Image (cartoon, rainbow, N blue to C red; front, side):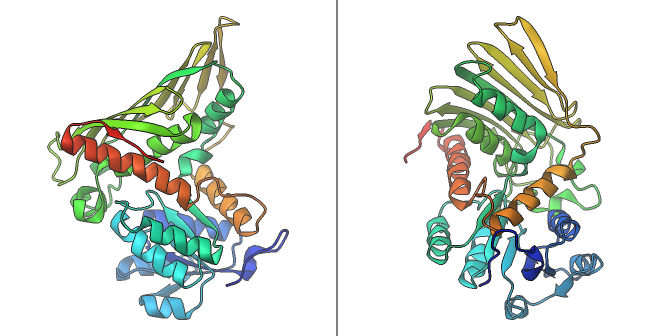
Length: 342
């Protein structure tokens, strides 16, 4: 296993992208933009492998051949149910890991991965790209500065019509529609849970109502309302759905000295200060576009490989967010509040 050192050119590493769907190809393009060494791609679907090859990667259709290529870094960008086994296999081949969110679709086996990466001192990052959105970063900075005083509540929403996610393919064939692949809006919408944890701290208890309520042809939940009690005492309300025909993603943080509101579509973070009795508006940077947060995420990962930065969301962070999502699914199934342990 090779690893970068401070100020070392990342071109010396080999990157293996496992899974060449839309997010896998996005990461390939961003790695190439950042000049990140040699890149190989693996996928069992010939058409996806061909698309990855057209991006200038080495296309490999056999996983044993991919390991024989001796990659230094593996990006796991496959359906949720395959994250853990492939990440563990990659770790046992001494690969540093980038794993798309969520870390897995269940908690069983997660500790085996944590043990493997710890023993091998591997760098890991879970793909929580919303932590790199300028609006979410600004919200966290304001809260860390005490701009709204003590946080008492948060309301978060994320919704979009599932067939519109990837209009070039049948949504019924995607992992989101299939419980056996770890689909469902709770795991797909785990970004909202993750960034609330990042901003407000750990969750102590979870309650949830969820179900397949729309006329989508899926066997997973399409709508969920998750109630979180943070260890700080704050209450979080998270709405997620596959149903809204107009994309919606927003956040409201309520403190005893002010309020913060943010909407993805406008990009503005709006801060009301009780002391000033006025609003201050923080827009997205000029000409910002969505891929920038993925590019910043990958740039951060390269700096982590170089030991220049510490991972913002490593596999241990990924496990904590997954615990909340799994508790939400369990609460919905049993109709009771779930208490989270350490």
